[in-house]
Image 1 (cartoon, rainbow, N blue to C red):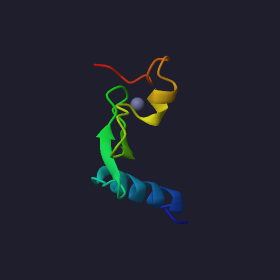
Image 2: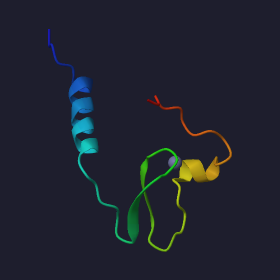
Image 3: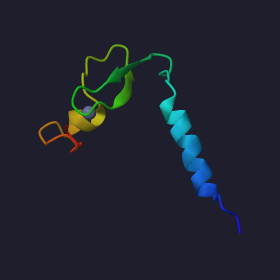
Length: 68
Ligand SMILES: [Zn+2]
């Protein structure tokens, strides 16, 4: 019986990739949403300060995080 399952390895790989700094596509800039701290890419000519999630649901509360 295999001790390591494929999903576990895939998740570990995804986490490793997620932990690495990433660059936006050409014509995009990387920004961090001031509301939810989520990194997102937006067009260089965009003045949108928040991620699409917050921009579209801006009136609702941001995702609940464990606040210390
Ligand atoms: Zn956001």
